[in-house]
Amino acid sequence: QKRLACERVGIRFISKVFEEEVTESTLLDEIRSLNSDPTVHGILIQLPLPNHLDSDFLLQQITPAKDVDGFHQINVGALTLGKASLKPCTAEGIISLLDYYDIDNYKQCKLGNWTHTDIAHNLYLRNRLC
Image (cartoon, rainbow, N blue to C red):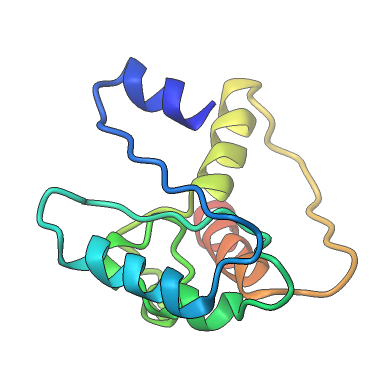
């Protein structure tokens, strides 16, 4: 679906698919390569990753300016201050749905363990809606 959405609006889409047994070193090399590629403007790591990989570490290796999800600690800090240059895509999708259906009154509920992804999304929603 992401590929089709990109094609519809003229964005070049590159998919890198790895075996479940991929090493952290291999992924780190790929992230570094994409970070240094001037023709790549955004990087997204599809979560969840296999258990043997450190998602937090790998997400922090993405250059903040190319961090499409807004999960890098610099981008989360910018969200905290209300100065984010990138919008977390899931949170922006929620905003788009609320706007489309003209929903003003809503309650946000999060159950379970919070992750860095939840923090980024909730900060953005707080800044945008409160």
